[in-house]
Every structure is written in C-alpha cells, then in structure tokens.
Length: 93
Image (tube, rainbow, N blue to C red):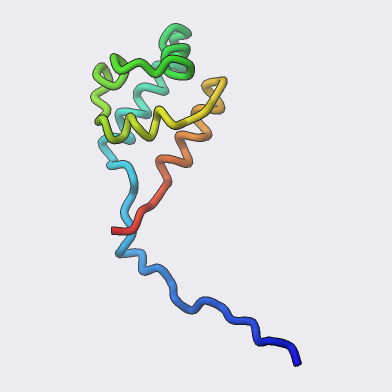
C-alpha cells in the first residue's frame, strides 16, 4: 500500500509579509545604479569596492547596505540582477 502524499494546506497570509527594503531605500538604490550606468568610476566603486562613501552619498541605510554588500557580482548587469531579487524579497513579521 502506497503512503498518501500530503500537501501543505497552510498558506502564508500576504498580510504577514512585508518587503525587505522600503520604497525609499529602493529608490536610493535605483538612483545609485542609474548613475553607475553612466559613470564607469562609480560603477567600479559599486560593483567591486562598495565603499561606505557610496552608502552615505546616496542616503542608503546601514541595514540596507549590509544586504548590498552581500551581493556577489563581477559586472553591473550581474549586480542589477541580484539587486532586483533583493528588492523583491518579502519577509514575514
């Protein structure tokens, strides 16, 4: 006799989920990436160095910056793909 397959009937209530990053922080990050697309020096600092002066210049919180620092990328395109995933991450509270 085969064992029954159980499905999870518990669904995460969307009201318990909130974005990891605030709209304001997303806006700051998008401005940074947008400017980096037109400035190769800024692009290098963002993709390879991620120095704290960028965080301060673009008014990015320390908490958000800690997530940005964890992104592994060799190009601005790779960085943007990872950032998009980060910006769409939802957390439960």
